[in-house]
Image (cartoon, rainbow, N blue to C red; front, side, top):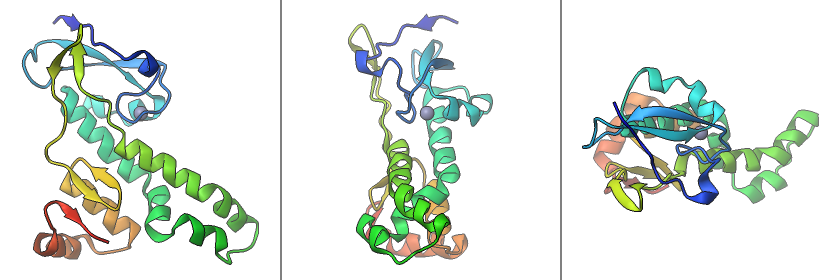
Length: 184
Ligand SMILES: [Zn+2]
């Protein structure tokens, strides 16, 4: 199988294509659409690679979906900070004690990092300036500034962040979900 040389914008040479974190390695995967018999080498960070999703799927779009879902699950704690507080509320909260002081200081930046990783989009794939695969995901689910690659992934986030029963939540969203976006 041949390897396609994907254009990587200069400022993204060392950026994980999946989450935007620093990357010093690449991962080989197949394209999802024709010419799907080609392999591409995508920059990936240590954390995204450690999720081991590449062992489960072998196409780029599927791989990105799985990685994004993993980020949501693994960052549940950080994401729930933004779900339950605003930055100002957190600063002005009367949480005291050394453990809470650390939380007040680093909680918001941790939330922003997790949020950026969830929302990051690596852009379309081009070879010599020609787009070869439009990898934008039509099936996007959004809630409170976060974009999820699947309904299940959004459910995971909501049930963890707001301590809600997943089965119940699924029913509510089917009834009240408005055009894939639900208002807080
Ligand atoms: Zn990454």
